[in-house]
Length: 175
Image (tube, rainbow, N blue to C red; front, side, top):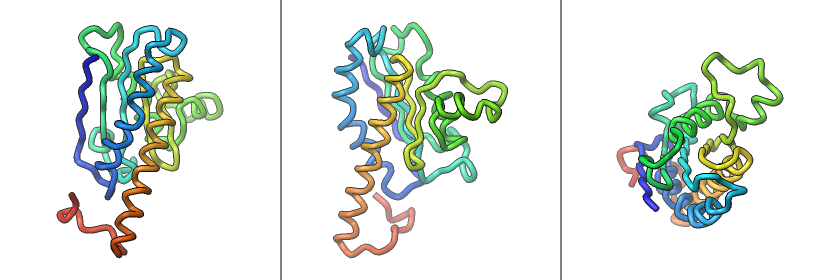
């Protein structure tokens, strides 16, 4: 199984480290589930995690992408799962809510060109989107990733608090 992971420059203090750790924790379960035809007909998936420290009011979408990861060889994909996942992430990031909630309860907020696919989630300002599985499982994978990202940031922040660090360090002093 081919995987490609890339990280963009992070805006939030601990997001960069936490994103890699969250992906490492969630990926084995996600990959196992992708083998089930009830979860995914293809076994392919693209993941997008947005940087919670770069909200729509202060950042362009492309600069706010914290991590992207592809499962399976994109050359063999039967659809552009990367673009689908990005469109789902954009919708959830821009509105700070799950894509399905937006489409079901607030369709009047949709704009021309917005995706009607769901699978993007927003958990406490943490946006994750996946594409390649059935939409309810794309959403479940997004929740898993957002939950792990939240947990990893809390773990890292607690460690810094135990070290007596009372403020986030300046950007140029961050790891």
